[in-house]
Length: 225
Image (cartoon, rainbow, N blue to C red; front, side, top):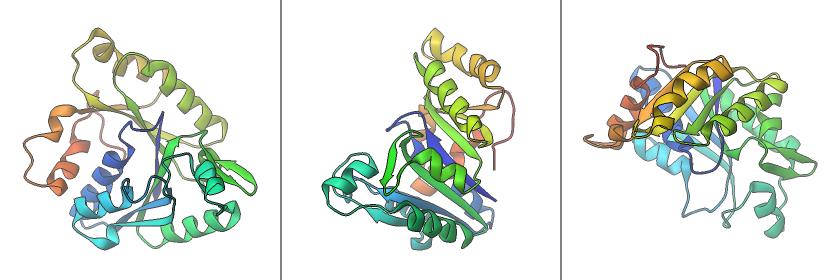
């Protein structure tokens, strides 16, 4: 089985959730690996490198393409005069996912982020073409209802099953945060998981941190993997 970790936006915590899933599965003796098709802002931003650090294993993640500017993949590729060809990238991603028992595909930004110019494709095209169910990572606070519902709707319109929504950095400090999980379950008709900011403290290692994150869940549901 494979899963795509997609976000409502950039900076919502896709990489932390990806690392959490891979670390938890590997802790349970499941051969899991993260696949990052395109990394931008490299090497300052290195999502695959973070997953490797979390799991203390170089085989825990693979990065297929990288660009220096922190932009949408298609834009960074165009500015670098190094185009991303969608067909080869799709098949390379498919092959990378097949090399492990569970492949965790990490997107870039949100679903409508431009991925390639040859032809023009977006993150959602890759997820849909690979037939990978999605876990949506979103912010916890005010405004997330609209962003999250639109992301779930876009996924389902492309026949991408949504395993659930993970609200990252959840503290419950505001009325919006406290009511968002239940409201999103009603709006999106899928499980909603909460990942508290406090889960980021008190851990002895990145691996322990990542392995514990999925245990924080909403409504008593089991994590998606």
